[in-house]
Image (cartoon, rainbow, N blue to C red; front, side, top):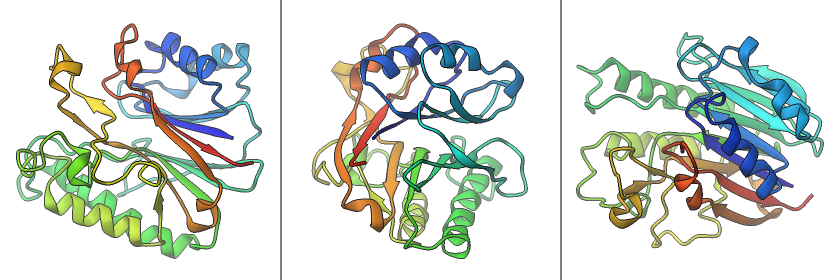
Length: 263
C-alpha cells in the first residue's frame, strides 16, 4: 500500500500535477492539505475519472482544507475541530487494513515567534499542545494509526538548510521543536521517513517561492511528515520525497512525501 501526503496549495488550480503524481507513482491513498476549496467545488468527478472514487474532504473558501483521496475503500469518516475553530485542519478515515489515517494541517504560525504578540504563532503552539494531549486521551498507542500532513515544523537540525540561521525563524524555533517532540512522544509515534533516512542526512520537503533557483540554493525545510504508531512500524517498506515535483508546471512550494507499507 502506497500512501502520500502533499500540501498542494489549491487542489483545483493544481489538479493536473496531482493527477500526474497519482498516475506516475501509482499512489493508493493521497492526503492533501491547503486544498483551498469548499466541499461543493472540490473536483470529485476529476478524481473519480482516474480511479479514485473514495474521498473524504473538509474544505473552505480560499484557505486551509484537507482531503483524503483513495482508490481503496474508506470508512468511519471523521472531522476534528481544534482550538475551538472550524478551520478545516484535521480529518480521519479508516483504511481497509483497519489502520486509522489522520490528515492534519498544523497552522504555519506567521512570522514572529512570540505568542504574546503574534496570535497566529499562539494558535500554532496551542494546536500542537491540543494534539499532544488528545492522542493519548482519545486513542491508544496500540492502535494502528498513520498521521500525515503539513505539520509546519522542521524538528531536526538536518530538517533545515541552516540550523543556526533558522533558530529564530518560525518552523524551527526551540519552542516549536519542544512541543512537536512532546506530541510525537505522546503515544510513541514513529517518524516513517526518518526510519529510512538517517538523522544526519539533509532532508527537505519545502522550498520558498522566493527562491527562483531553488535547486542551486537548496534552502529547504522538512515540513511534511508521515508518522505511524508502533504496531505499523514493522510494515514500513520504503519512503521517498518527490523533489522533482517542485519543477512541475505551476508547482506547489511543497513536494509530495510517499511511504510504502506491506499490506
